[in-house]
Image 1 (cartoon, one colour):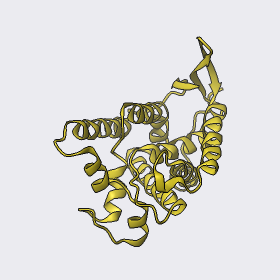
Image 2 (cartoon, helix red, strand yellow):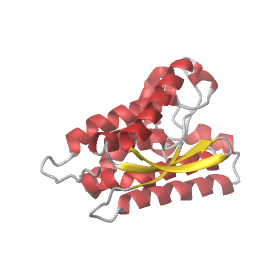
Image 3 (tube, rainbow, N blue to C red):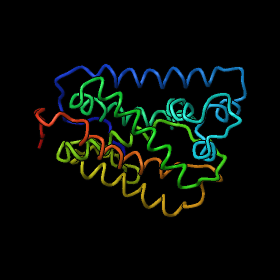
Length: 226
C-alpha cells in the first residue's frame, strides 16, 4: 500500500516543506558524490545512541549536532524516496495549519524527539541512525489528528494487479503506525545490529500528535475534507 497524493487543499504555498525536501536531496547527492567512504560519513554525522545519551563522543561534532545532521542524511534511493514522498503528501497541510516558522520548529523537534526515542530503545548502541523518517513520522501524527477523514490516493497491490483507491487518512496512516509498533516490538534489542529505527518512527509519531496540539493556533480554521 503506497500513498501518492491526498485530496486536502491548502491556503498557503508550502515553502518550508519544499525547502526541507530540497535540502534532503542535496545532502543525499553530496553523500553520493563525496570522495570519503560512505561509512565514514555516516559514522561522523549520524546520531549514535550511546553518544546521544552520554554526551561523550569521538565524532567531529557535538552529539546534539548529529541529531540535526542525521535527519538530512539517507542510506539509499528507496530510503530518501519514501521519506520525501510522505513529506510531500502530508507536510504541506501541516505547514498550512502551523505557519512557516512554527512548522520549522515542529519538524525539527519531532526529529529530535524521534532520535532520542531510538536512543532509549538501545542506549548502548554504537550504530548510527540517519534519515528524515523520525521528523516525517511527526508530520504523519499531526496529519492523523487534524485530518483523519482526508482522502489519500493509494496504490494497492493485488498480486500482479495494481488498484488505485481513495482511502481515509485514518486508515492509511493508522495502518502505517500499527506496522511500526509491530516491527518495533519484534525487533526490540536489534538497535545494536542496525536496520530500521522503528522506535524513532514511533517516537516521532507520538511527538507530532503532542506538538501539533501545543503549537497550532486554536482560532485557526481547519478544513475537514470528507
